[in-house]
Image (tube, rainbow, N blue to C red; front, side, top):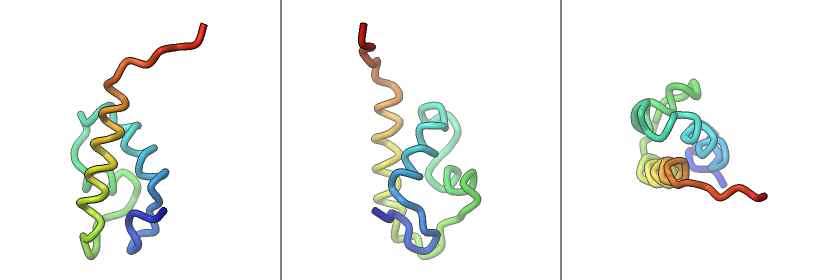
Length: 68
């Protein structure tokens, strides 16, 4: 699903970029967009993008069980 139509950013791309930001230590959604070489244009995507980024940062913080 596209999160940002103006920049053609898909949800999976945003999730990967958010996961690569070390759990939120590197800025907000606009900073993540900038690292992707993009910038918000109409800004209608930002609420949804922020929620996705928060979800990814939360997943990054949670300990994961590894299969034995």
